[in-house]
Length: 508
Image (tube, rainbow, N blue to C red; front, side, top):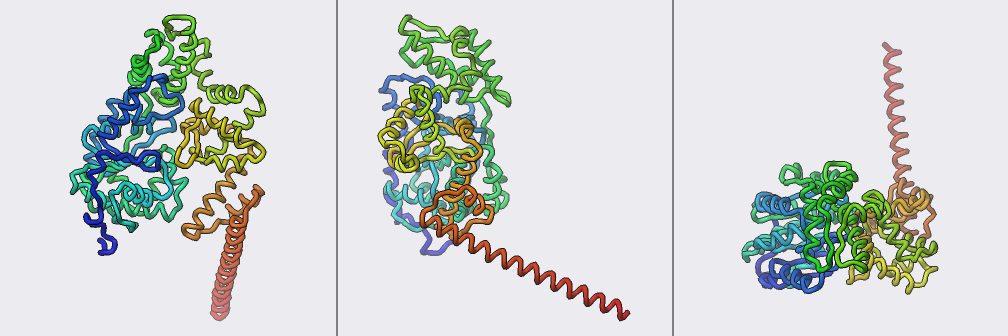
């Protein structure tokens, strides 16, 4: 299967028992286990719970104690881990996949003896995994090859550690990772699936449902009948009983004297939330947005009362579920902008840079935001970024000071702010950006259709981008001339055959 130079031996692996006290936090790969999670949760417990609902943010490991409604599903998924090499979770945007994984499944698996390596973003997964293991002192090997994951898992097993690899929000893999690196990663998965038993290989993929087709195509091109080897679970919306737990139980953990009217929950709130979901059930994102807005309104009333009941009256004051959901992001932006039109437009410009046109979030550095808005003072941009963070509209990655929307659910709303011309320009910029990355990694050039998209948008190009575009155009022209020559040759050969046939007919 492998040669000596590519084999990772136990001698090349450091003391991996140190994983018990290690957490690679803040990077693209997070590592931990039961001890790490207990430490995270204990630290979070020392802080007063001010926000019982996550509003626009996904639940994380630190939110384990306020995550309710998915207990049965968490146990069901955990039961599948040891029986299947690959567990594939998919569902609609806003179905709560990331929250389920981070606040539900990972803590539950860790409690039952698993060590986890969780990917939170993707550039080159094989290299990211290798860097994580090297930085953590687990591996000293710098070789990248298809057997890397296989040998790493074997070494973990020999060290009595059960490891689960978690690839959350895997749609970003298809958006951000060049095709050559994607194939390299899939080949690594293939080798492990061919050689390891289900108890030795535990991998979880989670992605939005609209990317499932591409996932299947790319994986089955390398791993034939890949889906036959996986356990696939579609993450459905919350049932009414699950939603009820998610509404009521977080309030029992806070000191504020706020409660729900029981009849209002069953007869009004759950009914209104269910009406906003196309399929049967209740969207976790809808629930968090509406309950957060109700809670914030109740907190304002506490200034004049000793106890506030969230009921039908308060609900109607906010306009009901439909109005809350339609206006929540606009309301946040207007509040941060102090209702000034110029500042609202600036905030729209900031948030527009944090999405991909295919419908996913994108992390953008502060430096890029400053560069793309040269007419705005960097200090003003930074101030708005802080305020958007406080409003939980965006999240920040401290290590590279990059920003993105706090939830995928907001992407479609932000896309509505683009006019047709802006959207065409952004698609062209993304085509150029991704194409340039592919060129650097695998020397893949642009197609004629991609070149036309970029030229039509009239994007300002730097020297490197201009060289890339001209090289692509030259290659396309040469390819077109070659194809035209082939067509002419085929036509000549066809005519020659026809003439020969006609001559034979005349002779006959």
